[in-house]
Length: 383
Image 1 (cartoon, rainbow, N blue to C red):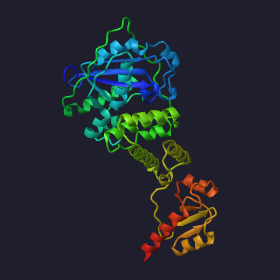
Image 2: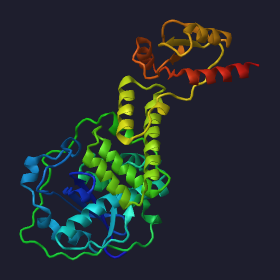
Image 3: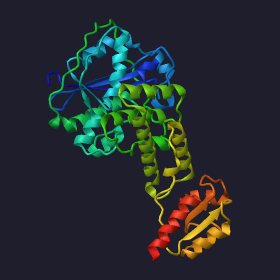
Image 4: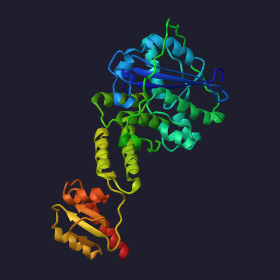
């Protein structure tokens, strides 16, 4: 394998270099053929523009102002990458940014192949989720501070070492850039350790897509949605990523539907979806253009004697529905309690007191049509 492996990680101002986003931190960890870490290097990079989502990557303008620009570290970085196999968690993301940065300086980073620890972890380590934290947890690899280039590169290096005995020959990268005089590196003054919010935590639980391109796209979507906001520019950047991965609109929308469904599954893991979790799911659904209705209720089944509550002005009179429910062996109540099995609403998005209480208790809220189907299943099964 020659010089071994260069495990890289970059923090960036955005999602796509095609939208003039830049690298603001880069780390390289060297691993030899035996799996021993031999060197590491990291620096902040001054992008000569705003820093993007600072609350995500935790890098301040004051720190970046004293850092070199990419031209100032290009020779040093090239020397650390060239002749080694490139490795990263979602390699396509990091590689696109590095190639774009070198191309701005008139240099071509030739890396037709490399190793992606997101893909290796699923294939060899049994990681069912794609996030770096989830893969590290499965492989018992220490995970430092998320969205810190050096910590993430170290973690990716740990994943690589777990897989080395099953990795064959991979073509190393090739790049020649003259060294710049007085090259220097600037480190973060403090690790980024801000509290993660609901979506960021759920992302670590999300399952993989059916193919590597889907995983690579969803990893970028994770980055975009971590602040629960998707700007017009980020939407365009996601389209750029999809095009780079040869994903058409049908494939992207299918990935979005699966993404929302997986988020909902994680939220439902404790048996209920809280009001805050529901609000987040609705927000994500609106951002990625997916209907939220199907994920806010679990698969509902009724049993004889279950307590049901009606709310809102139905298309048919309320007493007709109550009579049907009673005839099917259900118990109709006027108020919602923790023992209520189901709330039937004229509008499942109802903001009525009964509906709000049901959401607090994690009780499913269904439409008249769905309830009619459930009644049919119940009475059919009773025969």
